Length: 253
Image (cartoon, rainbow, N blue to C red; front, side):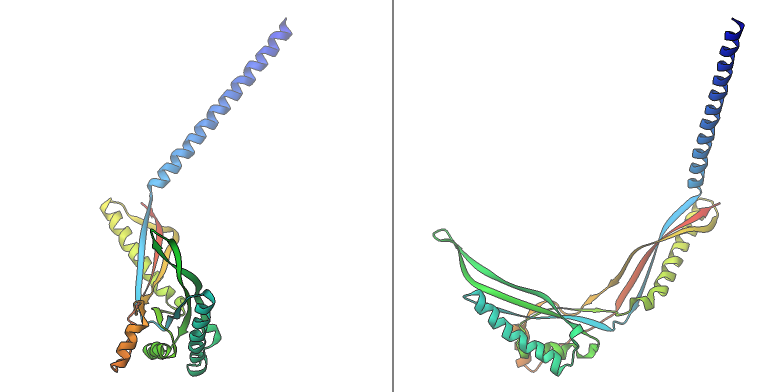
């Protein structure tokens, strides 16, 4: 009998110790949660924006031709003759490298007519082929477009101005974004009657080059009329805006 009582006593003591350790663990976990919440209350995250304007040094031109015919084969053949002349002009006369000439779009598709009596019927076929041309001499944009029209191009898209090496301006944009973040953070800390501490974390958000389109898409027939009147195409490069965003996290005291 005495032996059995001792065993029960041992079990009760062990259970009490286990319960006590569980309570301590729970108390420790709660303390960590409260500490984490307190730490979060001492953090400030702001979005800093930086932007600079630079002169473009490259332009991407969309130059193409469009043809119509009763059959797909005829439309494609007619358009191929136009594009062969345009490509020859670009390579031989303008000395543009192969790497700076690439196909942008190519398709041959039917065009339909509709009527209550006959329903949908094929009217003719359209063949379209456009090239993206990379040009680094921005003073020659208008001349190249006019020459392409003379060679047979009858559809021109946008002239997209940009900078070839964006990395050269990276540091300037980041400096502006960081200065903007500091300004916002200091204002917020002052408004909340707190002091701004050290920077704890920085994450770069959206980065972009605001390319400028200097020439709206148009049919070359309108340009041909201008050429007949002795005018030439004029395209203004303007400026490029390079921007970035920084999410900056500060300590609040």
